[in-house]
Length: 141
Image (cartoon, rainbow, N blue to C red):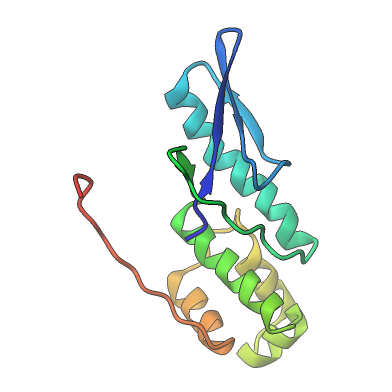
């Protein structure tokens, strides 16, 4: 979920990273490995802007052989909550009422930089009619 393709461009000794679906997310690294590590942070920073402005998240293009980058698993849950709220036309105050909690708690649930607990996100997702599934796969698969 939320795996966005990246373009890696050799730029005079560094590797530039661009996200075709999210033009606001740009970073670089000294090599491909470092560039991809930094790409996740750039992606999360750009997507946080979408959350703050209550914009729908950009749809992910097909990878088509390009590397893909995802936000952290916790951020993916927060982004799913954000996207679900937009699809159901719910405001933060609506979610606060559904969860019987205060607005600062909702702000933290949607803040990609805040370490929310899985139980809190599971409850919030359930309140908007969603549920989460956690899977673990072998790297070789």
